[in-house]
Image 1 (cartoon, rainbow, N blue to C red):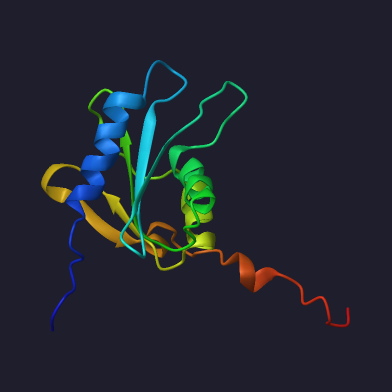
Image 2: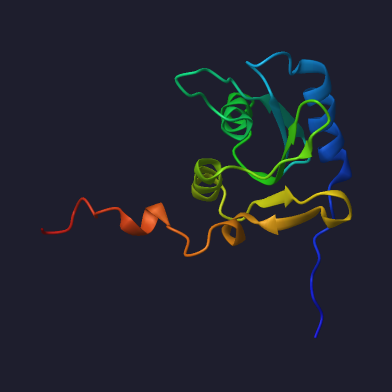
Length: 140
């Protein structure tokens, strides 16, 4: 039996780390994310923290990618400022990432344990939004 271990996209981690180091300043921007588009391009973003809540870097990245005409992402990683390294997505981001990109690989872990895993693996008993939408033509 052969097990498939996805290759870690080191360039993606380096891109997110660079953005975290150079663009995250103070408490408003503390996380950076980078994603690889299906066509190979890398998109980056930072979170927009506010005391009323605010979008995580992964969610800002989805909008930034769409603004650049990128609608298919293969891999994503989030990195914390102040050299915190790879940080796994929060629950809300896991769900949104799964809904937008069900085949997405997410880089998680620390040190030698850094690995890429399918976004669905980060959500036990995954809720699939599309499965719960009512058919507009169905009789109720």
